[in-house]
Length: 246
Ligand SMILES: [Zn+2]
Image (cartoon, rainbow, N blue to C red; front, side, top):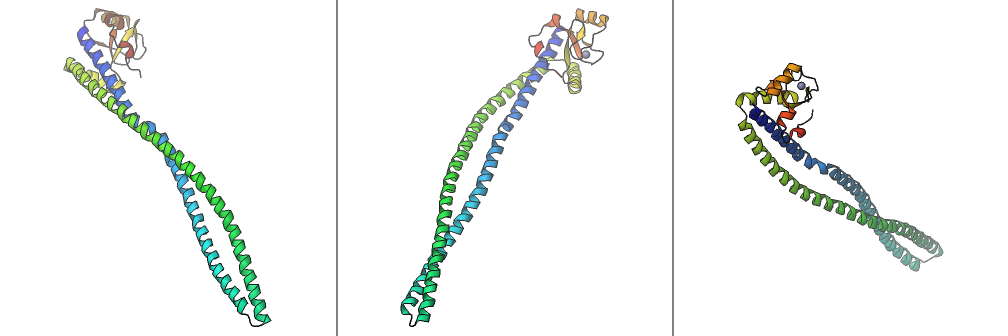
C-alpha cells in the first residue's frame, strides 16, 4: 500500500508540474500584449497627425500655385499699365497692379507662416517616428526572447508529460480511475493528514480512521472531501509540500 500511495502522490506531483508548465506556456504570448497595444495606439496617433500634415502640405502647394498665377496676372497688369493710352486706362491699370501686389504679398506672408509651422511639425514627426521605431525594435527583441522562452517551456512540458505518463503507468488502474474522478472534482486527489487533520479540507478525521491510516494497510478516503489520505509523517514524500492548493 505504501508503494501504491507513493505512486499516486508521484502522479499528483507530475500532474501539477504539467499543469503549471502548460499554463505558463499559454500565458507567455499574452505578456507582450500591453506593449503591442501601446504601439498600435501611438502608431494610430501618428497616422492621424501625418494625415493632417499632408493636408497642410497640399494647402501650401495650392497656395504657391495661386501666387504663381497672380504673378502672371501682375505681369499682364504691368504691361497694360505701360500700354495705357489715357489717364482712365492708366488709373485702372495702376489699381490692378496695386491690388495684385497686395494680394501676392498677403498670400506670401501667410504661406511663410504655414511653411514654418509645417517645418516644425515635420521635425516633430520625425522625432516621434524615431520613438515608435524604438518601441517596435523593443517589441521585436522581446518577441524573439519570448520565442526562446516558449521553446524552453515547450520542451520542459514535453518532458513533464513523459514523466507524468510514466508515473501514471505505475498506478493500479482502479486507483487511476478514482484519482481522475477526484482530481476533476476536487482539483487534486491525494491529501496528507497532519496531526489527525486532512490537509485537503482541514477536517479532523475520526480517531479510528487516523489509527487505520497509521497501519498503512489500506488506502482510505477523507469522509468530508473524499480525497485519498495518508499520514504525512509515515510517507514523507519529497514533494509533499508542493501538493497543489485549491
Ligand atoms: Zn478532507
